[in-house]
Image (cartoon, rainbow, N blue to C red; front, top):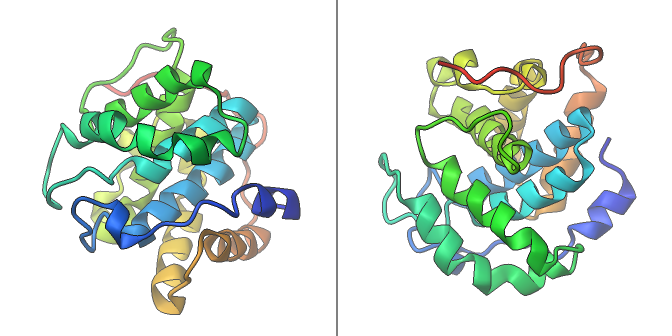
Length: 207
């Protein structure tokens, strides 16, 4: 699922504390790398080749414009405006073009909003992929905070055990770069028997 080609493709995606307007413990480098990893894993399961790449770029900047670790509906908009232009050249290195910009920026903006997006929206796959990847890492806030009803794809529900394992192992082993997180994820997935086939690709929006 995560092969050497993928590892080489994302080798330039290196986070630094100074990239974040507020580098807190809850929404900093470790959280961001886990969300990026979840985007690749879930996107691979869903066979969303294009949307996986776009959501990965969105995940890289999604919390960079936060000003605190509390509840905030605006930080996605701030990141889409201030951080996306800053890192566009990095995104170009994996094949992103100007024509993809609106979709990535929409996904980043939407990830911090409480509203659901219509199933027929042109950018729904990318936005929902980023949103589900972000929700998977809510396990860091406690067992009861990752709620199934927050998820948009039924395939994501099958990744709850994996997401918990990635959080625990990445917290204990303190990986340094993105490739470290991907290697841990690969080990976890190899050890899990996750029934993900024959499920519908798109779930109905939650109420």
